[in-house]
Length: 118
Image (tube, rainbow, N blue to C red; front, side):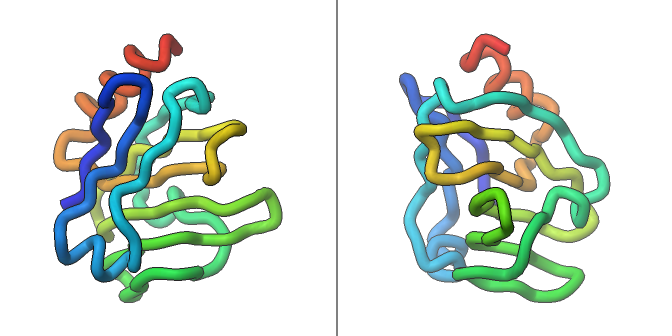
């Protein structure tokens, strides 16, 4: 299962081996300085914006990969029927939002907020 991890000055979405294959990419790294807001979305499907991009999408099960939309591109690692941590980002991040179903969403959100100073 994907996890949000703070390492130094980076926020990392750590993906398991099968998630890396399904998303067609390695772990996602963004600078902590790009973090604008962090929230927990209890309704997993509301964390998803845009259309399915590169990755794997199984309706009502899993959304894993990029999601382009008019304001940019999001990265999602979301499992259905579980809350998702939504991290809103600004430049220099390549993504507008990270949406991740972390095993402990409250602890992950708190860690990101603390590290980003928000």
